[in-house]
Image 1: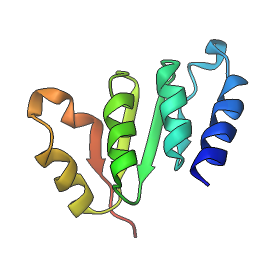
Image 2: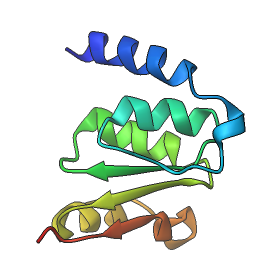
Image 3: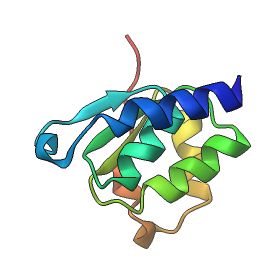
Length: 99
């Protein structure tokens, strides 16, 4: 599954061109988040779980100033904040409770 999702995400994001960079992209796919961030596109990632691979992808992707993460429970956000210093752009990770 990981390999097929990686390949699919890479392929699907190839079709997004920088002329569309005024649009914000909202995704639940960590690899789509990664590839759009790599292209410096504005993207929001909705995080439901915090796995080892996802931690790595989030850390790399948040280097793009236009990338944001929404955590759907406070424990996920707290886990993220414990591993990052305030100067590491922690304002790019927000807690947005489901309702």
